[in-house]
Image (cartoon, rainbow, N blue to C red; front, side, top):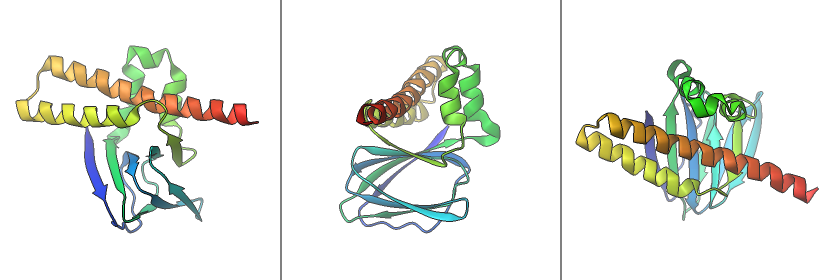
Length: 171
């Protein structure tokens, strides 16, 4: 399960952390990110079509510029259920690099450009979960949700791979 939030225009957050893995997507505007990495303050500026993967328990703060819209999903990872989901899924079991990408706690925060339609998949996933909650859900919807969720995770991983390819072509 996950928690969905939409943050908009001029909002400020104090330093905080989550027990969940947070995925944030900048729809429009700019977001200033500050977080602590080994007791050292790190800062970055996020632009439209960038996404963040923030590992659980990372102390961070976001400041939104006046024209900003940010979509946020917090994926519950109670007792590593999220990683367990990946490890028990046949596709991921055979593709351990993907499991390691989400399991790896370093870097604490990963910043990626959306090169794999993460925005659309995130919106669809959120809408689909709302429909399941409204209708009470059934086994078929649960299977469909797992498929959409897996597709969403794969698109994030593709962004990571594309980032590495872009680095290699620039060198």
